[in-house]
Image (cartoon, rainbow, N blue to C red; front, side, top):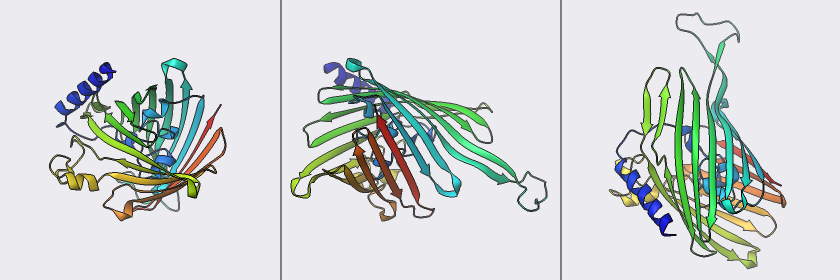
Length: 318
């Protein structure tokens, strides 16, 4: 256990030392994927049973017991979509491995080349833009501790192509059956993308904190879960107005929070806010576990300016 404390301390020290660098590389990896965590304000870290969100939270693997597959479809505005598949394999005493492949983008976008006249009818030229995301992750339970690592590769196809990478580390501690605290360092080795033109873009590490509080409600035949996840702590993502160190109140109001009521009848209801101070960031959702090896989840997210976002996730275990 002292080794784990030392590892976490070193990672935090490394992240702090690099907190003033450019931000922006590999942002597609941050798009919420699992419908379960998306429905509670996109809080992913303290939720250990939402396999589709593996890219945001490798801790999903820390307590994996069975071979599992998960599928996600997200319908965004203007025909943009996210589709992903995850496979997780238990390794007995060595923890578990997870693999994810996904595509985030849009196809058949009409465009007109510079200097060309407007086409007649629907005979437009079309193009596609997309990010292909590849994730490999490992997680293991150490008693009350859960530890996980992940490595991501990004293949971007826009007006020019590029490859990127990022690696993350996450840990959580279960104080009791009711309360769990989690931490996450995104891009602890830094994060980078190199374009065909030779331009090199990178991001410094960022850290997050989260918790889960569980309260049984036997008279309502279920349990209430309260989730909270911070915005960036190291301020490489946060503006000065929401810095944890300069304005802790605004920093807290910029964080994510959600509620989940799990009934004893394999059905759950969820709600949350992607940003506590913004009522227009409301998320809603539900989940059903009709048989032991099947989970199905749905999430709805409001948007203050664009159309609403819908997510569907399905997970099966063998």
